Each structure stands twice: as C-alpha cells, then as structure tokens.
Length: 94
Image (cartoon, rainbow, N blue to C red; front, side, top):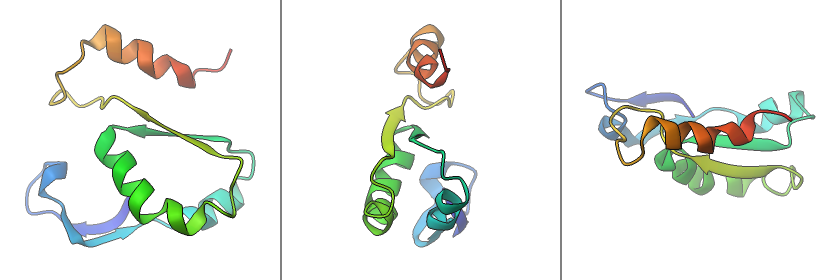
C-alpha cells in the first residue's frame, strides 16, 4: 500500500499516516490493463486505499472492482482460520 512511511514499531497501527506516501497505483494499473479485481488484506488497507488512492484513479479505471477480505494477521482473531480461508477463496479462479 505505502511506498514509504514512518513506523516506530512493527505494527501497522504504529504507522504515522501523516508521513505515508502511497504507491503509484495509476502507473501500476496502466501497466497491467487486464486487472479487473483488487482485494485488500484487512479493513485498514481497504479504508486507506479508498480514502487516499481511489478518488484519484477511479475515473480512469471504471471496470475494476474492489473487495475487502479479512486480515490474514494472527492479531485478527475475530474469525477462525477456516472462515478466513473460505472468504479468501473468492480470489481463486474457477
């Protein structure tokens, strides 16, 4: 998600968002024109993308859909492994 950011600790919650610079998703998507779906590993990644990136690129890529998935982090214990796996299987083709 971020090309650079200050993070005094190892947790994502330690990221100093005022210092965060998003990756260049516009150029990435231009280079990979076949992408039609983007998935997020956790709610925070999706929230940040939708707030800081999507408003700048949505008009250029109207055929792409975006979907949040449960975090794979062990810190996210709200769902069992089996339930997380079932949700993540939506990305597997066929």
